[in-house]
Length: 116
Length: 116
Image 1 (cartoon, each protein chain N blue to C red):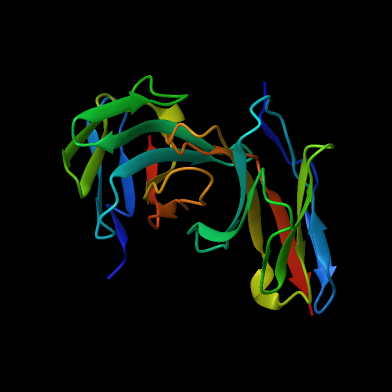
Image 2: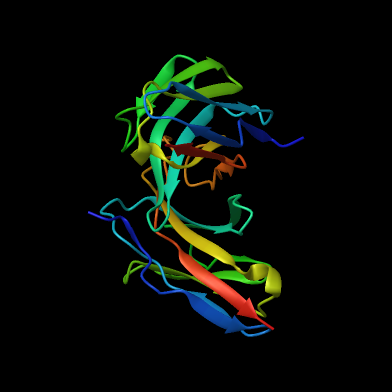
């Protein structure tokens, strides 16, 4: 079964507007971590933000915030004040458990295009 | 210099050829990973290693092998390449501080492999 689901089609967003990227996850482990990575057209994977399952507050990193809704198993990424450089693929990923293997399961990604 | 270096960055080969993708890191991390990215499928884990003597299969290890030559080096081999192994391959590393710390994966720039 798919652990991470990202189903939005490609998105166009106006520069300076906010955009929300949906991510739902599936796990029965109470201990897990959620990540978002950005992949621009150049291909590298860039870490954006992390949320632990026991974190009480939503994670924020500059213009990125993670809307963590534990009961709904949802970890949406919000990018505020979009910039042209935000055009990229965005991947949600999950690490399950405390065992230390640190394997990430990735979703299929969301394509975002920021238009001026 | 990059923290995680992959070579070659691009490779075109023919069916049946043996291919090795190399990864070296300067982060001093114990954990290293090989992922494969296909369009529309996200990243999938091929192999991972916690230290020089520890090698583990990921979700799609068939047709691949790995070697952890040193803490800093982790190579991926395709013994007899086939066209459906055409993909973008990523090496990644991580530290492990235990518990629910982020222990973020740091990715190399990727190796694009085409098997004709």
